Image (cartoon, rainbow, N blue to C red; front, top):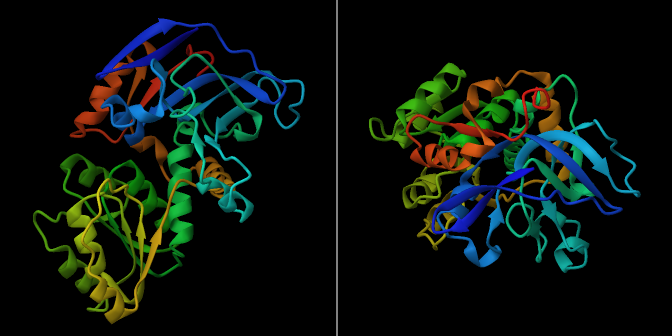
Length: 344
């Protein structure tokens, strides 16, 4: 087998490796496709070196076929088509005991603290493996993890049919949030500056506004007769987004912070007081979100195929990463980790 090994200093080497045999409670997966995401770019740029051991195998958005199972595994079998929910909670901390295992105080993220999916054969804990239906292609199956993020965000945001939702940021996660919110019956407006992504969003039937050309607050006011939107999703991780998010909601509206901010940001707390706003943080997903993502992906109504900009062979992992970080004409890059027969 081969794997793409991050060696530090923005260097990735593809090398032959020995497959890891599954223990009694593990599953070995023949990886079909793996997606490159923002976390992988952070790893590539060395921003998470303190959490990994070099050389490191990145990747956590994936699909594949079960190749071997441990003696204690019963919920999947060899040949099953699967994806992975890449979280390893401790099960013992106060957060886990309160039922919030996805934000465990000692959470390990597969693909960061442990080896990820950019390899031919990937061995993972059995309880992270979920089956996907035959009606969903393995290529689209690699989008289930980011789709689960969007399902979690929309669920926490309490989006209802007929509401006005605004998404700040039209990258892969912002676009998926928009699609899931629209599927729930909401009216959705996405703020984005990238021309490629603006065009793609419009092709997907999502209304857009370019803040370089139009005032977003005015655009929301026009659509809501001056009341403001029901819910805002901040997905830009930018100071501009943190400033704008409080200007858009109606009285008692909701703000869901999805983007990861590396530094504290000034936030208009008077606006929270004045309009009795609600601020929510949203991190990764829970199992019900993954199950909803699988159901939505299998239904075929979200046109997920339009989000895949390019597929590179695993041997060209570094080229795929560099293409993804360019951002200009790209939404989602996949790596083909298997031969065509296995990846269909």
